[in-house]
Length: 418
Image 1: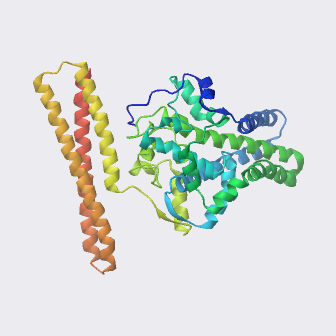
Image 2: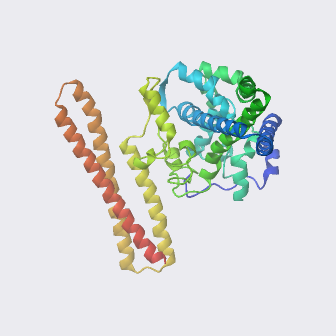
Image 3: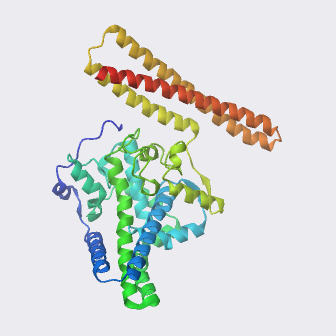
């Protein structure tokens, strides 16, 4: 499946799901509905009957709850467990997230969440988008795809596939298995009993209610923060993923680092980062948390795309876009042989510069690997550093030349398209 050829819709409307083995999940439906209603009731109560102290306490608790649940989802459930972006995780990290932080996300156990997310990405390889639990491509109407991928999917029991069973079986760390077994106890304990008890201990029943309603609000904020990645980033955006339905890169939306650069993420999901290049550092607090855990020795072996892999992904994405612009220009104007020849020359030059950029990136990665061995052999650090600097500079120059050629092709295409 390519990004520019989205698969044909599978279902005409939501009712069609029932004939395909879907059924209402009454437990999940009731939980989501009741907690949303509770959050709305809390807002009304705080607005009409609570004093400023209770309002600020509820607001602070809601923000803390939403941030903790969201960062637990992105750092742990998503990058560490679903994508194995970290090779070695300290047991304390597993226990903290499984026994405490991830419970505030209220999105199912880590084991189940990660298995479903693996299936979501698996579609990029095999194209079987009927398996994607929160697909944004199942229906012909955009509004139906949004409602389904954002929220309605969690109201249904999905037919279990062999792909899901395999993904679920692989996520078998003992702490993940333990959390999955006792998830409901942890869910209600941390999200409902804990704020009620803590609030009552601080200032009696009014504070207990304030923290409880704050928890409900924080819970749904966390849920919608995550769900926007499932829906918005696969429906609207500026840069398509090369081989996925993700259509979001350099976008305003950055729900704790997963929304922005979502095209990069789908093109190389194993990366502990969410985007390539300097702009990939922006709006990605998840990356900073993982680096902080690494500095404390709690995680080791961070996975990331090499410069060569980054170059190949970015260059191919640019070429796909460029080729479509060229086709649009040819359809819009009856090009003379001389102009057609110009486009062919521009495209050939872009392809040549692309290969030079990838070769330079490959050389840089090779030198970087060799430099680690040479350091152990007590070779000159200055000579190694200088060679690496020159290789990196050459790689950047080749990238700039490629981007300049792509820009020139795009400009020419725009002239003839209009």
